[in-house]
Length: 497
Image 1 (spheres, rainbow, N blue to C red):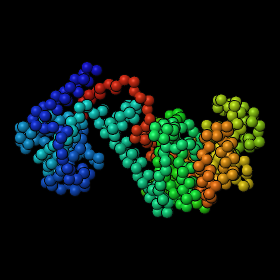
Image 2 (cartoon, rainbow, N blue to C red):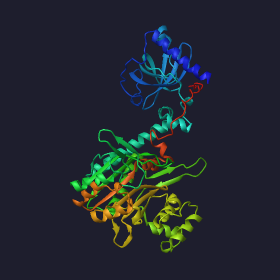
Image 3 (cartoon, rainbow, N blue to C red):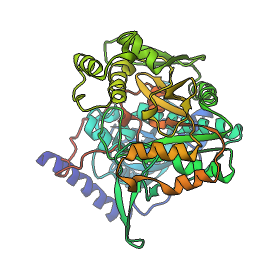
Image 4 (cartoon, rainbow, N blue to C red):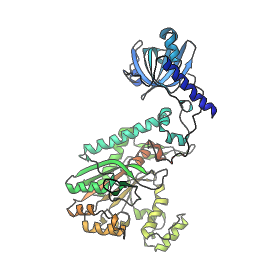
C-alpha cells in the first residue's frame, strides 16, 4: 500500500517539475490535425502531422525515447530525440508517464523494423495522469474494476471499445430501418403518476412543487398508445425504463427499451417487421447473419443463425413438448407437483397460469437458442393484448426468444376500453390507485387497432455481440456502492517495444 502511495507521489513530483518549468498540463490547448487512423491511411514519408492521444508505452534510450500514443482510432509510435528537441524540452519530455495525454507535431518516417512513426518536432502536455494505468494496457481483468471504473476498461481493452461502438451502430441501424419505413421517433414522460404498462416494482420519487409522488416508468407503452389516439399511425421511442427489482446476468435496474406501434397492424405485422429488422441490423453492423457466442473457455462455441424465416411455436405447444401432451388439461395441483419435481420452488400459492409461466421461463426458455416466436400466451400474463378469437384463454401475442432470453414481446393491442378496464381491474385487484384512468379515458376516445412491439436493446446487443452478461453492454451498470475508497493502483512494469 505504501509503495502505491509512493508511485502517486512520484507522479505529483513530476507535475510540480513541469509547472516549475512553466508548463501546466491542465491549461494547455492543442488541436490535432487528423486522427491516428487518418495518419496511417496516408503514410507519406516526411509528411508533417499533428496528432493527440494517451501515452500507452515508452522505452527510454538515454538521448532518445520511443513511445506509443493512442487516440480513439488507433496507436502510433513516436520518436523523441534530444538533438532535435534540445536539452530543456527533452528533459520535460522525460517527465511524462504512461497514461499522460499529449499532442505531438512531427514528420512521418519508417523505422528499420518497418514501424510507421512520428519524429517529434514539438509536443504539448495536455493532461498529467496522477495514477498509473492498469495492467500494462493489455486489458483490465478484474471484473469489479472493469464495471466500476469503466474508463479504465475502455482505456485498456480495445475489444470493449469496439463493443460499445457496435452498440451505437446497432441503435443507429434500428433508427435508420424504422425511419425509412415511415415511423416517427417520439419522447414520452419518464416520470409518471401511475406506473403502468407492465407488472413490475417501480422506483418512487417525490416532486416537491407538485407535492406528490411520481414513478420512474417501468414501460413506455401507455403514453405511446395515447399518441395513436391522437392520430399518429407509426411511432417509436428508444429510451430508459426502470424496475426496482433484482440484478442478474440479464437484468439491470435501468435498461434501454425500444417500443413501436403501428395503427391498423397486429402481432403478425410485428412478427414480419422484427423478422426483417434484426437481420438487417446484423448484416449492416456485423456483415453476417451468423453470430458466434463463446460461453465458457474450453467449451464449444454456439452460433446463432439470424437468417429468416424463424421458427414459430405456441406457448402451450412448447409446454406440451417439454412436459406432456396433456399438460394443459392437467389440474393445477398436478402442474405444481410437476414444477416442484423440475426444481422450481415456491409454487404453492401460484395461480395456474403462473405455474405454467414458471415452467416456461425456467425450463423451456433457456433452451431456446435460435430465434423463435413463442405465440399465444395465457391472457392473464398480458392484459394489454387482444384475446385470440380461436382460443379465448390466450392472447394474440408473441415473445421473440433468442439465446435463452426474451428479446422482443409484441401484441395485437387491446383497443376496447370496456374490456381493457375489466382486465386492468382484474390485475390491480383492490389497489384501484394503480389504475391509469387517464389512459382508459384516452381509449374511450377511440384508438385504432394496432400492433405494438418492444425490443430490449441491451439484450439485443448481447445477442448480436456475443456478450453473456448485460453488464458487459451497459457502459455504467448498476453496482452496490463501495463502503470504502478503492486502494491505489498497483504499478506494472512498462512494456518493451
